[in-house]
Length: 379
Image (tube, rainbow, N blue to C red; front, side):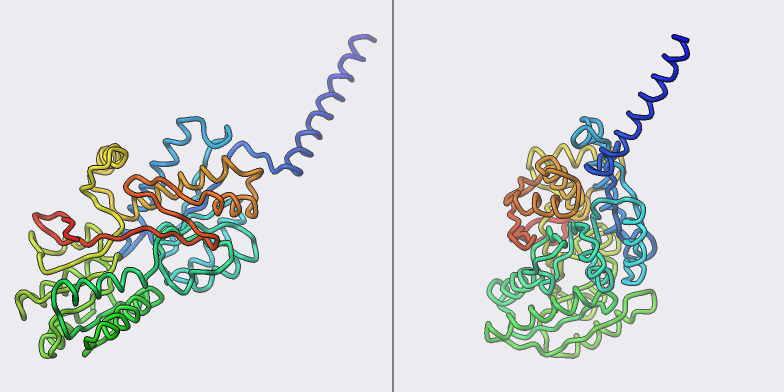
């Protein structure tokens, strides 16, 4: 009888413990892992930003897990390809949330956001974008946190370089309509600053990137105009191809590029030296920062390539998120968002930057050209 009583007691105790565990889980949301969603363009043309961003994110997660995770919990990445499409982005974000992602790191291009932000805000899930820079998304009290400075800042810096440093008077602009939320806005602020400085915008045209894009025809049109410089807001491959057409037609013609161009695609599809191209970025691949040097070496060992701006941005995004969750009372969206906004300032691998009350950052930009198949800082 004693044995039977003991058996009953053990069964009852086990049931009580199981029910208690379920109750704790339901009340406090305790989990053995923390799921982080990641959504970016990972396939097809112009996917280098997404692929290198994923590489940087995975490096950070591996490091964090080796150091004990976040609050003792292992971090698990759930990775989706948004195909740089607003429809696909909305679809994969729903999948990520249904699969238990507590935060989404992404998207990496502005065009992907069009259909998904209302759902993200309604779901109260934090979306942390390492690279999106749309001015239209700034100054809004929502669940979208933007770790890149705005297009307006990029555009004004490029316009001031062209006019104040290079002495140009007549500018043109080309922009890829497949990512128009980013490209049209940057072009607009560039044109506005050019005019504010007393100079002229004499040519402006959108184009659809792809293998059928007539970049040679666009270069011929600008060569025939009176422009003495052009803003190109496109991915690195298209910017490199256009640059070469332009230099054949008008050697020495200056080309200014937004941050989207600052990838290995520009170098791989260009020439050894492209000293008449000027690319803006918040990332210096040759920085001598000690913390960055360790990251760069580790990245090279894993991928046999240099990191890009999206690699370091996604890597830093994960560490910003870790800092926020470490300082949060829970892993629910409201708590994580509040903790992120309370960070105020984050010490990145190359620069420190602030996050304001709307979740917008103030990263600074530098200007680079291409020499000996490498980005070299010039301003």
